[in-house]
Image 1 (cartoon, rainbow, N blue to C red):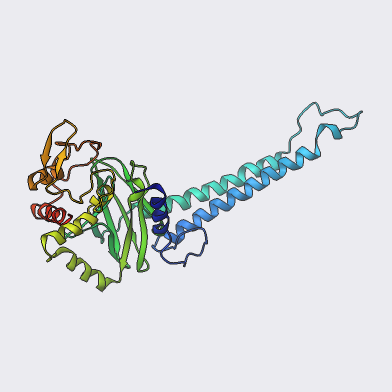
Image 2 (cartoon, rainbow, N blue to C red):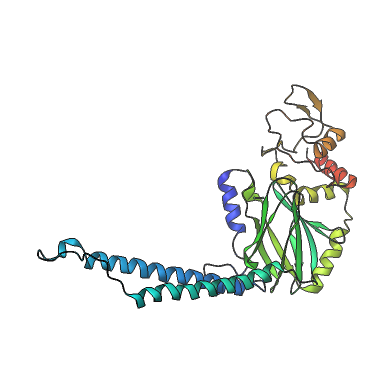
Length: 330
Ligand code: CUA
């Protein structure tokens, strides 16, 4: 994908879902913790602006008032520095109360954000260069985070490669997904709709492609979606087409012949492929299967060995679906 169209598509996808934010410069407050977080943020911002104005104002005032050239010829600078105890105590103690208030306020919010309610809907999250995969208890898998409204949702996250970070600005929640361990996050969405979700930890070339959506459904609608999600009844190549989008293949492999991170799928099946080690092979089912499960086994000439393995992440049926889909791309 060329840089400009990539930037434009990211900018379009980053637009807030609905313009109901009370602050023009912040996204909508669409979770239970958003309003409180914004209050604290606003308070800190205004405190900083006021102290900044007071300090720079006083500085400019003193610079003008006490500049050397205004001093009369017979006047000399005072030999000792005078001080005003009341003034010094005031400007030391007042900020102490302000920062203590900030600490208590911030700590209370932190405890809420980090204490997942016992009754929560669990969604497992797998981060990978460069896609998100959301898995539900019934086996449903999705590239978008679907959740019901007014429900506590707990996301249990991990990464298969590098550190990624899940961020939903409209919910004011963010947490890293780290390889080799689980991290968790919870939220309760207050309004239905679609909200941008993205990776906020630079994770390589297509970091900006890790932008997707949280789809907040009305409760009854969500149950229907979840049921439908797990039972796929289409033909194998239709399953493959669905997986191509959902499992992130589209990030690196085009279907129109254009070159991305990896070779295009268009006209791939049956073609004589040349590899980095000088060997060649006619692309068949076994080669495609191997490339999905052990991507490093054969590296196509002119490409970097960048693909992660899908071993343990795709069932045989899903692999067959992808192969069937690639066969349709003549
Ligand atoms: Cu994943 Cu940035």
